[in-house]
Image (cartoon, rainbow, N blue to C red):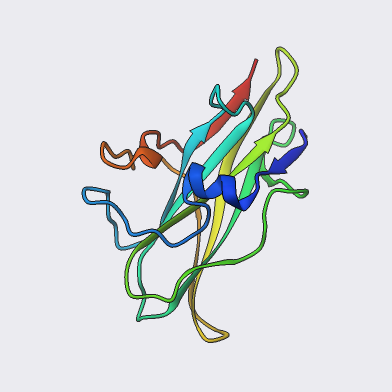
Length: 165
């Protein structure tokens, strides 16, 4: 498994709205359930990085919390496994409720050696909380179909990211 580094919060705010509450742009795709997508995959400006973007709807005016993790595909066992070191930061509050919000983060991996590849996807735990009490939860994996011509952070929307040289 390749090493992973998380980028600092200031860079995340520029790159993917860094797990912060952001009003969704007009024209973005809305669904009654939360969703997540890969919105950056090994771009030339940040080799080895993968971005995960999430959209979380309001539920009964409860605060929206997310935990974003990255999974890698283990070819030996033909299964997805959670990156254990550096692949998450714990739960982060997106908003106090009252509307759909976007958030996200970037993870940076060591680029695999020539001829090797690293296949990644996002795994997101969503909780709606009133105070300390969890009133609802969901777990979702990244999927495609959320491109937006208006939101530059949704120019790409994919279920997985393959990093290879």
